[in-house]
Length: 222
Image 1 (cartoon, rainbow, N blue to C red):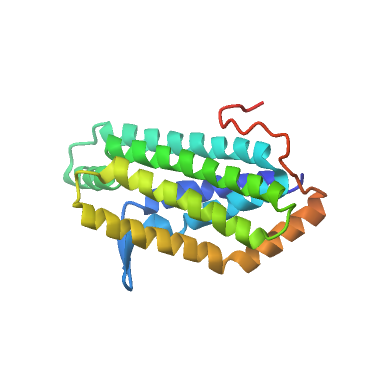
Image 2: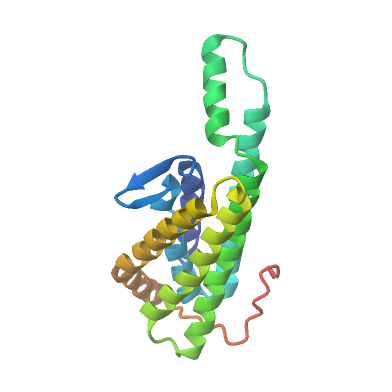
């Protein structure tokens, strides 16, 4: 497996960068979403590639690695934000900016971790199951279906846990639709590239795993 470690590192990097970028809201035409949404769909594309080529079991390990990397980054940011800064004006100004950007509230931290966990495992599970049912055909349909499920759960859980009761329901619904449409749209546009990467990896690695007898318990790492 020449490329599994590279994909795992890229997957974790996408998670960490998108999590930091999500601290800013951006407007793109009629869509309003957090900045992390620009990059985060790549995490689901990497997830599709991992499950399609290497199977659910190896994908499960990478998802857990990403989860712990995200948890470590979040706890580090929280701890640094809580520590006192020097008393001079410049240090206080930077400390305040750091706290505003990265000192996230417990609800946002919980929402981000829970949404990632549920969404990624749902994506991998749906893709693996559909691969067996379709006997490996219609990758485009399997990839889009798994993304529709995974991204829907990810976006919905995050908004509900992090912001329910903070913003009006109409605002949450608008943000959900914007995020969901953009993420699924990126997946659809990237399908030709995803096809190429999957085909390349299957040839080079000599792998094309079918999860016919796999235990899909997300907590079983053996």
